[in-house]
Length: 457
Image 1: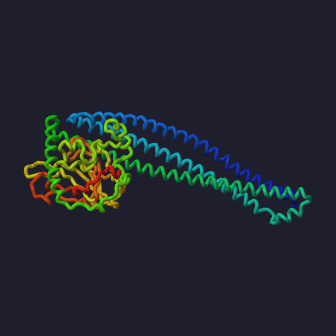
Image 2: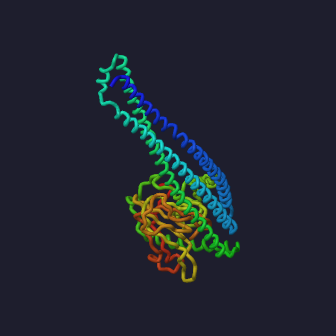
Image 3: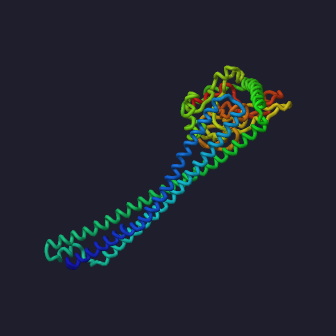
């Protein structure tokens, strides 16, 4: 083959490469223009949803402000009902936020799918370009480069032939690199799709949880109105009755605790903060910031462990408060502070004495045993979402906050125990007296097995 014929072949290959390379760059421009238009329209819709979310978040903050005010007022039937109503409005707004987030995620999924289609088209064109170029090269004369150089009429023609050959190889290499780049970009887009789908699944679960909160709020209001017949005097009588029954329960519990064998020091886990997570979601944690001025903390703690002012006033039979109280609206998801196994669940409100008096203590409760020697208890729930023997993960929803048992307002009683000392039993197993709480199943422990939750949070 002469240098001229070889040069013609190189020219043919370069045209082929440029032609197909141009196709891979120009043809997608039409598709890309359409995709760009679609992307712009989708992004506008996403922006609209994000704006709605921002507006709704302002409404949620306003509801939280109302709840903060109500929580600081003297507890009356009117404020109790108002608290439940505002909590329900706040939850309804949170549902709207979640639905907007789901719609925005669906749009993002649609946008990503379009981008993936575009990248797949570009890959197909690049592959076709490289394949055609290689095919054209295979049609060339099989003479080696050395033979072609020696067949050249002059040294300059030989260098020209070499340069042309190198240009073809460079063009092929460039196309191959571009193909690799587009393929890698496609992989990233597919990962984004997977992440967006996971986000949608999480939002769907969150939505289901929020819908349950609405049901819980509605049921709690109906129960309160039934108990009081919408009379303030009946409500105050109910509060007084709860206080009296709580006093009787504490006397029984103290008697039982004194009979239980103390836990050895070796069985009590070393104090270390951060071992347990706070038993609520980041969303609720953010809402507590608005109460920090009134409560003096950022975790909505309304009563601490031990000899608190309330305990000193005569509550808890002089034994001190055996956990911490966290003020939260009825229906707030209560989360496991650490992975573990559900030791037991129960509802002390179903226990009555022969005279018909009701047991006011833990109300609906869940106890979880952890592998590190700790156990946690979550009380005064409105709903229980787990069962004994079930394995749970950190942050898993165990139930929903309420005001069952001895609770004059909605809150979570959170207790931490040395797991070696906690037992699930009835008080009548040690005392046979016919009291409202005698046959109520609940978690109990010797006094030294009750640990300060703050030491482990």
